[in-house]
Image (spheres, rainbow, N blue to C red):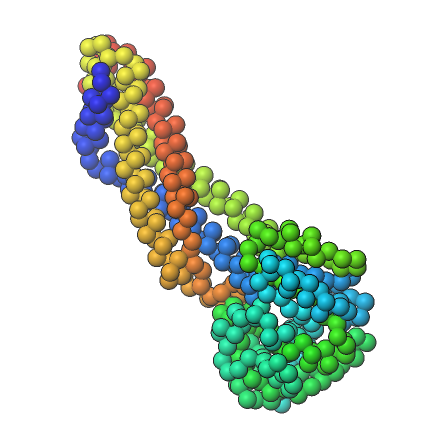
Length: 407
């Protein structure tokens, strides 16, 4: 019997029970849509989180003193870099480097006459393009090159303390001896990156102002480097090595995110397996019901000389038709869904409040990777074909005489 006839027979059986066939199409399509959407959501969330954290907080590479611990924001001279300008100039001369700046970090307390808040103080080079993402969402002005008496504060922090551009505030920080130092500053701009972890508790001074108020001389906590291409990270890390310094890559700087990626992919794998299992059960049920309903027909075909492998082929083709149509529907609708939310995002509120310095905004954006659509559809088809083997095998095992006596 020609393969074309098998396709015709498989098609006729599927349209014979349209309701069951449509339900099966829907189950396959919905399963694939859910898998595609979850893949797009997780891929988008993790990639955007990592990209934005690199852009706004960590950079691709950082150079620090070996003894420096970022969680302590130490201002002890032995924990700081005393030749930050030289290191920055060396990095800036490399063709792989897009932007670079020394940064001095300190813990501080921002206060008004009636309220105060703990903040992270960052002393930065106001001329560096490294801080263009901060400029992009700024209300007011950025720090001037001199920056004397100027400060930028997060917009959410400003709202909490009822502050605005032009207001005077007091900033208290510790010096290398652990004693408090205080200065008065004018707010020249409000930082609104869209990420609560950054906008809620960060203030920015020029590097020279931060060094002056903390008594750190010309020292810095780190030299942050942003690259044109993250593929060049290892090259730059190797080139920036020097005695007494630690050079960290973006993977090391964002260990929590990298761990989150692994955990997310693990749970995604479990979800993937559950969805496939549900689809597999539905496919198996559909084909088994078809076998039971057509037992007499199978007996007649066998009595007329149709071989077992031909009967099996017929049922496998039914599964393939179900899978192909369901997967096409799933790919199209899943891609549309992921594309829509890649543009409009999904509002989740202030997630960044609970996660600290990681750049997580109030909306998550999916990411459409076309290759992933076909990979997931392929595995869906593999599952469908494997599951269909049992009903097909069951049909082949039917004895023609017994099948003919089945009502």
